[in-house]
Image 1: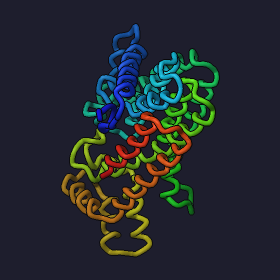
Image 2 (image 1 turned 135 degrees about the vertical axis):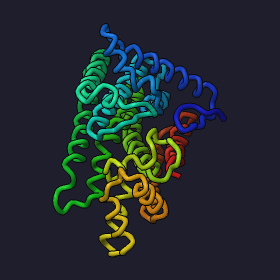
Image 3 (image 1 turned 180 degrees about the horizontal axis):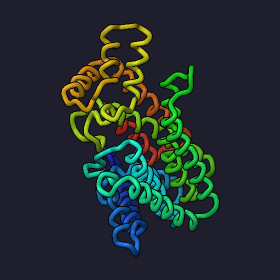
Image 4 (image 1 turned 30 degrees about the horizontal axis):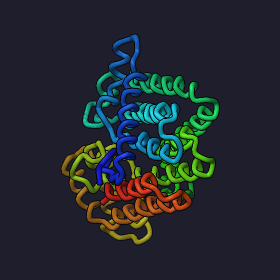
Length: 336
């Protein structure tokens, strides 16, 4: 058994491992090529997060999905570059909106160069992704446009907040489906479609990606609270400090409202306090780590990962299918 890709994904076949590793290496080259500009400063800014590394979760899914057709088909690697460029572009924009200071262990682009240049760099990456897409055909362009609409809609919903009477947890899951699930779904779809897989397989891997993307983001929510390391690419408690109500916090607030528990209500008040205060931040983290709301968020993560696994049932038994199933396990493992 060998290890490839993010989170130490297990791959049981040497030929599959070689294909995936070669594909991811080609994607890395493609990302560097796509972020070059005749203006040296633009190259520096555009490659800032590329060179900082990352999980390359979406390109990995493209490579695995392509195994159900011809993994060497010419559109596979470019489509993986497109989804990663799109993802990177959203990170530049997200960091501006969240006023983030760090991303992948380095200064965020907005801290280094200011908000305006960070936004424009994100736009530059979107433009380069569109150029690559144009060579992949109108269907690929349409798929990306629909996903991008969902992604932006998710961001707008997050910014606007739930409407009156809407369950905040349901609202949050809708936000994640747009912001994260949509692009991971496209990763599965592109990999299958570009490899020439049949329509049924394309549909299966699209739905798999959607559910896996949800599990992936929910695992990050859990990691932000539960981890003492930097597994999520951010300092633990970053979302709390930035006032972002992720799933464990939403479960806490729901339980506090339902039970009226004094301890839960006090913790909610602390969450509404100044979490820039290191002592308060540490105490909130300590209490959340021991709260049932965190375990509920873990169960939700497992549920989406199991849904992703079940979607794979119609696919033929093979090493690629086993790797996709293992990816479900790997995502859940991140959440503990």
